[in-house]
Amino acid sequence: MKRAFELTLGIVTSVGGFLEIGSITTAAQAGAGYGYQLAWSVVLGTLCVAFLVEMSGRFAAVSKHTIPDAMRERFGVNFFAVPLIVMFLVSLLTLGAELGGAAAALNLATGRALPIWAIPVAFTAWLVLWRSTFSFIENGVSFLGLVTIAFAVGAVKSHPHYGELARGLVPSLPHTRPSHYWFVAVSVIGASISPYLYYFYSSGAIEEKWDESYIAMNRVIAGLGMSFGGFLSVAVLVLAAIVFHPSGTDVQHYQQLPQLLSHVFHTPGAWLVIGSLFIACIGATLEITLALAYLIAQGLGWNWGEDLKPHADARFSLAYTLIIAVAALFVLFGVDPLQLTQIAMALTSASLPIGVLPFLILMNDRDYLGEHTNGRIGNAVVMSISVMAAVLAVVSIPLELVGS
Amino acid sequence: MHLIGNILDEQLQDNGERNAGRVDGIVLELRDGRPPRVAYVEVSPITLLSRFSRRFARWYARRIDRKLDGRGVPFRIPWSRIERRGPGLRLDFDATSTPIYALENWLRQHIVRRVPGA
Image 1 (spheres, rainbow over the protein chains, first blue to last red):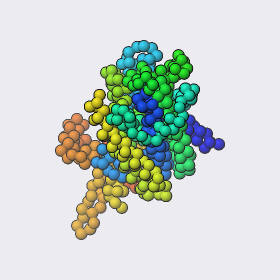
Image 2 (cartoon, each protein chain N blue to C red):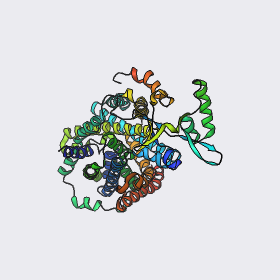
Image 3 (cartoon, one colour):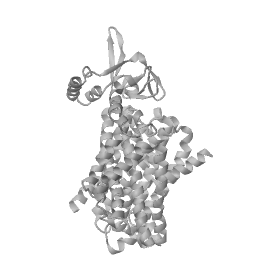
Image 4 (cartoon, rainbow over the protein chains, first blue to last red):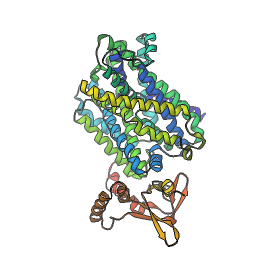
């Protein structure tokens, strides 16, 4: 009975925590720019992240190591420093984008300038981290994130062209603006496979003291939770394809986002988007901040744990305090959250192999996983998608910068 | 036992199961006619930095030595006080009163305790 509850909770929190500023804006840009044609990129990203999340949970449950912990132990600090620095910087940009997303929601709700919200949003997120436990953050905030299901309801009520959507699930070459097409595709993939997600998940498995008996449950949570989450991203893409694509309007400002649901639910629809954006971005802010603090604390062997009181892990607590303060500067100095998101997501894609490939080596190491090492399919899917996304990102980012 | 594979960069825990840093360096004792043996492990930012740049590590050590008298040398733990247990290495003493916890203790005392809710 307890396991059934944990399973349900795991799936619910995966769904509620899936959407954030990255997945919402990149899916909206994909739908607005290319209709249903880029639906395949959501599916590819979701497939890859489902495998990665399953692997990180299995790794923690069997080896009792988190990923950064094992990475330093297995490869040494000189190698570990590379993914540590790259992932830290890319995730810090993503964190700035999430704080910007929450501030943008408050700007849409109140009309007050976006930078004004930088400090209140950062302080609120910090206060939750300072005062609450891991379970509250993982379950409570993600549970609120279920409001994002409104996108799926809206998409269904908009009567999309299911035949065209099905055709969009198969990758195809663009008819117009090819460099932008590939740039948006890698941004969508980057938004789905953000490394902080599976780093956070492996730390969560250690915080919740998973053991080998959790392997089956972990598989179901990763598979179903991520699939339903990906379904929400497709819903955003569908809505943007219906609302923006026919008039050839690109999504370039966050002020356009409420239109995604206002055409179906009118004024309440706009408020649903604003509420979803705020909750999803606050949830992601908490997860990314913790993931970055975990990365440093585990890499350096500090005491860490969101369930500990701050006085019991002072370095860890001050690390997340400093991280959230630095990320808030992006919002305070008026960096546009949408542009920051685009850059962060594309850089996430470009840097995927740096975090993913060493992780795959760990996942095939019998010293850590015994008989639970990866199968060929898992290795092939994750390796091929992350390398392909990185190559596409490295080619399309300069072309997009030149083009814009 | 492989020094690099099984000791270097491993997580250390003290006798109260608190994380106590990682093995940043290994000190070997050379013995005439006999194989070298592990004498100490070092847990110190100075040792860690020296694995990237010896010059930077020396500069950092000098600065620390000036600011905190006598702390410009890496903290060493005799190998005899370490045993392998579970996924890491276990110390047979409380690390919270050693230099491993100096920064943690200072931050707790001077910053964290002053924040409500800590």
